[in-house]
Length: 374
Image 1 (cartoon, one colour):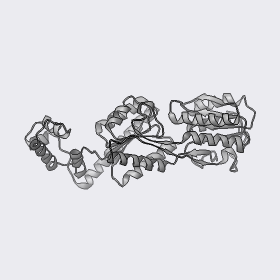
Image 2 (cartoon, one colour):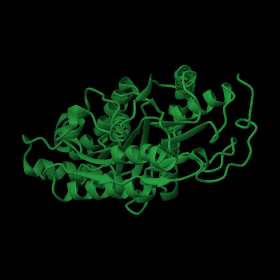
Image 3 (cartoon, one colour):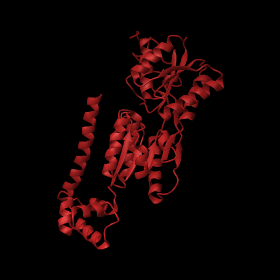
Image 4 (tube, one colour):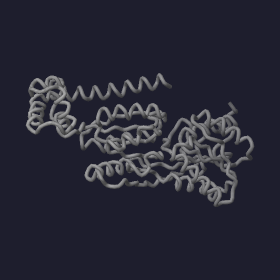
């Protein structure tokens, strides 16, 4: 996985560099001036230039004007970058997501990029791989690059509160205790969606056994989905059946197999994300069970309607475009009023009924129609 990440990071860097190079080439501009060039042009020291560009106080107005006149005269990188030096705006937005391979996070990235197009900033993307150290590295890089704003789906990096204090930031999808009450948030109503999906299995399909296959509980959205499962089961007076806490599809498959072997079909399953969903599908196949005759499965994520299994999941889908719109709304509000109190916007999750719970007829699939255990 680390080799894949290194290649992906290199691709992202190459993409941004290529985009910047293309913009410079299209405008016919030369490379940017160095601080020493500005200092020589203005007749001041490099340290004085640095003080002016950093907005430090101990510089006379006449010196500041002379330095900024030199910045304008030597603005080889174009109007946008020169304006950035004057206004301390970089024309960039930093986005950190947990896993670029996750369908929902890819959709959200695309939706945010589409929202940014009209304002013409460059989107800088970092994939934390759900690791705090990776997120820490991207936060450090984005702070050094002085991005105009940050959008973070957090893994819990220790420096996140510092970044929130320095840069207009919106926390999306999940939160961490360190930034609750400090930053704007756009969150999905995970609790309600999970409650509805489990209640659907119990009331509409008559399931008395419903298994929870959950991801990391340290992720707030996963924890909220588990609480939604619990509320539906307790309201129905049913015993909660939890396979454990899992990270990968293989973990989820192993945990699901252990608990499935003690149950008599038919029974239901609720998974907290797509990794858990595919682990459950693998477990069902290995045990020679069938969907939806033996097992009814629901999940929350953005899993495609047509897959090689022939399944159309019954799932809660977080509307990526609405999340992107609300995120841009909060960033715009923060820009207009930097001192306002943080706000949290909640987005409803859409429920789609499909083949995995039996609401839509299932086309026979070799994977699910009586395959032998693996």
